[in-house]
Image 1 (cartoon, rainbow, N blue to C red):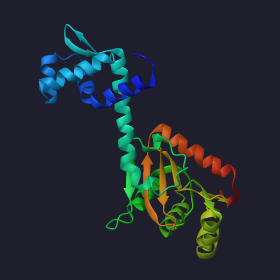
Image 2 (image 1 turned 45 degrees about the horizontal axis):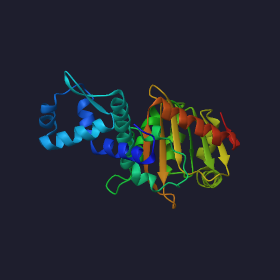
Image 3 (image 1 turned 180 degrees about the vertical axis):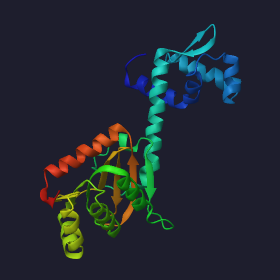
Image 4 (image 1 turned 135 degrees about the vertical axis):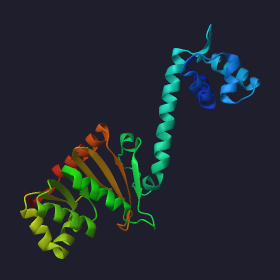
Length: 261
């Protein structure tokens, strides 16, 4: 294969167009005469596809039938991974479209993620998800540009019961709101030793909850420009959880400590 731009684009186009053939051959050699039946395509389509794939050194003939070359196996695997990325973005695009375009979200967060939307028939679905993972966690870290009453109740109740070990970074207006409307509960939670709060002057692009315990995980909670909850994206992989923890620490390190345990 040459390295010219045209040939590169031709290879990309061929891999995309003939991806079903690459996928079929990824499990091993298949006789050419059987390939059409397996894919449900005509013999002429098989001949044309095989010719195109061989032109790019992606398929070769062997005694056992048509087989992927090393180049073919590598590109088939990468193309399959790319399709997975596209699907993950498509599943989460309703929430991604709400976030600022310069948000630094990793693909690891979206990879096979759980998506909970605040839909008309189930507006509290994301809140219930947050309540579940916080209640089960040994340690909770997070930040938020919004203070929902349900979150106030959750963290106050968990702290007073002694079931909470949490660190939260909140936007300054959120802290002022809590002091004004939930002052007694905030102070009680802070005195419990289970909750620590920091105040930031930054504008937080979303809410984040990173939990440690029997099942580590991270949630990105999405609010619209009016502060209304729209949904969340959650992931429990090591890479996504590590990203969430590091992002929390970066905001905490630049925030002012308010108090707590």
